[in-house]
Length: 255
Image (cartoon, rainbow, N blue to C red):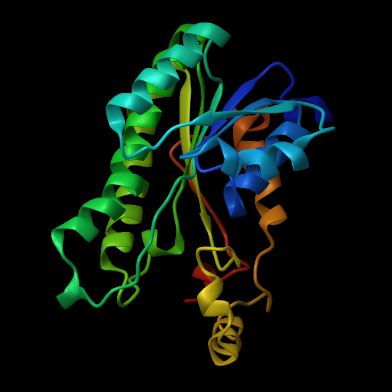
C-alpha cells in the first residue's frame, strides 16, 4: 500500500476548538500530515500554543477567531475564509462544552449553552464547510462525538443529548452528501485527560474505577487521536462515510 494515500499536502483543514487538548492534538496531527490547518478558538491569543507546537510541521497552522455559538458570525467568517483561500477539504467539528449538573437542577440556559456549542454549532460549521467542499469535488467532515453518544451518564443529560444528536447528524448528513463527494464520519474519544475533564482525574478512586472498565487498562493520550483523524481526512478512507470510530481502549466493546 502506498503511504501517499495518507498525505494531506495541498489540503485545507478546519479544526474548531483547536486551542487546547484533543483539538490541539488533532490540528497538529493534520499539519504533520501536510495539511494547511485553520485552528479556531473564541480568542486568537489562546491559539498561541497550538501555533508554536505546530511550527516545523510538514504543513502549517493558521489561527481563526470564531465562536460557534454565534452562528451568523461563524458562517460569515468561514465563507470569507473559503472565498479567500479556495475553500475547505476537511472539517473537524471539535468545539465542545460540558457542565455536570443533576437533571433536576438543569435550567434552559445551561441546556441551550451545551446544545448550541456541541450540536447546533457543529451543524452550521458543517453546512458552511460543505458549501465550499462540493464545488471542489468533495471533502471530509469529522464530528467529534463521545462515548455518551452511546451510553447514558448521570448528571450529563444535556451533554449526552447533544452528543447523541451529533451521531445522528453524522449519519443523516453522510446519506445526504455522499453523492456530492462529501464524506461525513465521526470519532468517539474515550477517557482522555484534558483541561475539561481534569477534575475527575484528580480523584484517585475515580481513576481506579474507570481503568477497571477499560480493557486496555490505560487512559487515552491526545496523540492517540492523530492517526484516526488523518485516516478519515485522507483518501485512505475514500469509501467510508456515516461511521463513528470509537477510540476508547475497548470500553464500548466490553459493556
